[in-house]
Image (cartoon, rainbow, N blue to C red):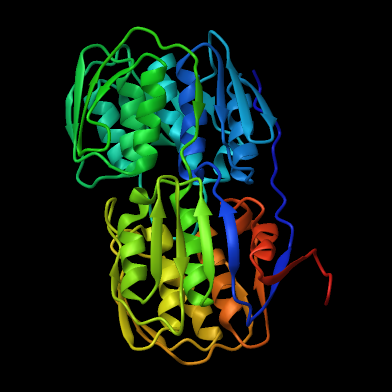
Length: 432
């Protein structure tokens, strides 16, 4: 089957954010971006129709749908429901434009290697937050019996038969854990994956695979034991709530000295994040399926370092920096995951933040007033962080390249507005 023609046109939309509003109200979290795309890929492991519910309506979902269609699947998008019908034989060549648009497309590597014993996946694009090589993905597949190589801008994997193995990751990489896991579920024998990622999105993937008939033990720990099975079956699965979106609303509440209730998320998945906000002076109440954050007065500076789960998530690092700029005192932010995530700092400096980079640390002297300026998003989370900063800046802040935000935050402007933010989306040259 020829690959579909797929071209993403990034509209030059921007957000106009007027500072001074206090966020107040409630918001319901939808499914996690970092889970739904991997679940869509994993659906290819079983012939038939798999249904995913509670899916976020973000730009990356139709992108992944195009990837799966290019591999021979039929994908129906209906609001928060995604139905993926997988043929008996899927295509193995994922070398077309849709694959190159975003990082999560590499998640098809494991399922294709398991189902077809061969895969050719274009090296993906995505956020400009630093190098994310595939060496651990390749090494894991090779230990399962595949041969891999990089060829003409693609990662290629081939295997006569996958067999269980003992694998230890050098770093608890989420992507490598996902690809090794989705290959091992159909491998012959037992696979033990040590130093595996523990993120809630990995647990969500394990849950769905087990619903499909996989045999996985240890989800949520750093050791996964996978006993391969001959066949998986399609299923219906509800996507876990997005803890990064939930954390973004929590930071917005503290930065604007507001009162926001967030539903649709297990607060234990944000335990450290909420503890940090308490240290900053916030009042936090937790419920079985949500939490409330109230901030009275200016927050206090807090130090952060990003680490794999259950540590502080790198995806909330821009929000932490934005909060520290409006907090009393000095903070040190340490980035241990992605070396280029500090591109965000330069845009914060445009807004008047007193922040300086020293290696993988940022030193922030908070409390200085922020003032409006045009700023540019370099990735999904940086874009959201700049909007939060704009809520605290004097005047009107223009946030450009907001297609990044569209990739991770459903109905962002509408939900901001419902909470009392003064934000509008301007199309193209509108307002110029």
